[in-house]
Image (cartoon, rainbow, N blue to C red; front, side, top):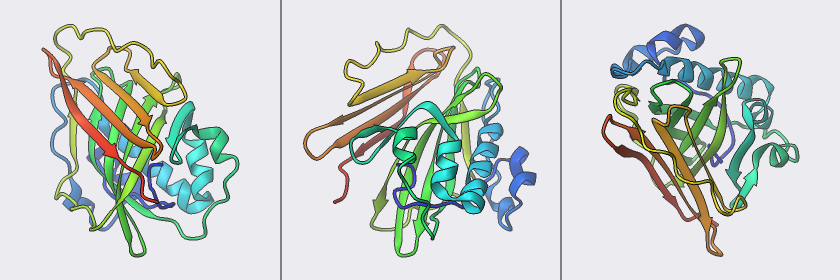
Length: 230
């Protein structure tokens, strides 16, 4: 799942989202310019902030369910349908704190990826979340995972944001996953952001990759390879 330990508390902000959270260190986290695309990464950060707020106020799993796409997947450690799994969970008494460090978004703004760090007591880790824009313009997550780290991830001075190029003609996305039980994937409508995930072996090791169109070809912007901890 996104925050391998369970919880809430996003504090990293985009400029347009500052008013929604207003943390004391927001100035330190002002982002670099997102690029020349037409998408608005700050809308995705605003969604992360609202997600975190609900987790604090209503409970971790309540928030995860509310912000999940109907087809969302997570890893426990096998790939599971998120909403069905979340229905069986009880909200934890102590939430994890998390913070987004990086954002990538398709040119059309239909899909985005957030990546950052979390902490809970003596535990630290990272997360990656893939978001899909809904018909009404809101964002819901379609994939969420993360893992623990021996040391806390280094927080950058600025949250970085990058939008896919709107130039050129992206090639068609990969074919649909051949085994829905162990594979998942998708692409934005304009095909400028693509992602794939797979789980293999008895240890349920997984790989999550996201690609962003640069005008001529795809760049791999996220390559997560995880062997789950016991």
